[in-house]
Structures are given as C-alpha cells and as structure tokens.
Length: 83
Image 1 (cartoon, rainbow, N blue to C red):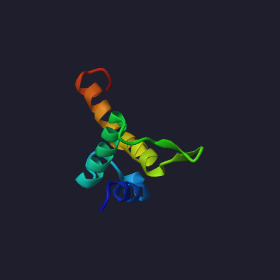
Image 2: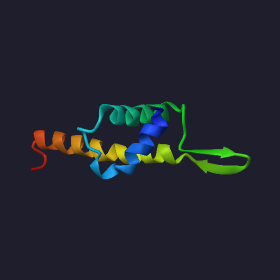
Image 3: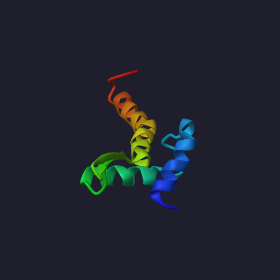
Image 4: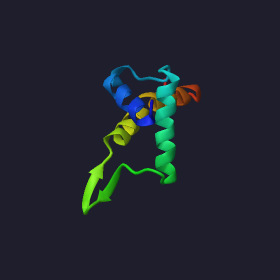
C-alpha cells in the first residue's frame, strides 16, 4: 500500500490514532513529514495557473498531532514542568 493510501485509510479512523497505532501508519506520517521538510513534496502546488491542495499530505500533518503532542506532554511531565 502506498504512503498516500495508508494516510487516507488512517484518516478514516483518525479518532483512534495515537503513539501506539500501527507502525505502518506512524511510518507513513513520518515519511510524509520528512518529505515535506526536505521539499520533495508540497501541500499545495500551482498547476495550470491554479493551486491544487494535496489533501492526503494535509491529513498526514493533522494526524501527526495526534501522537506527537502526547510525546511533547510526556517530556514536559518528566521534566516536572507540568503535572
């Protein structure tokens, strides 16, 4: 299954995505973010003088918050910055 298809399928079950989700989902999200960071892919592209939004990339970004925010708060708790 392609990264795009994994992201789209995960989006259908987005309420259950967390740090313990299937490793293929986490990997697909991370791969998408890495490609965005390196400029290989873009959320929006101009084609034929019109902007086109890649919905699956946008969804990957949103899904990443589902598990990355948990890690962020865990670090803050370990550091004693929040209870």
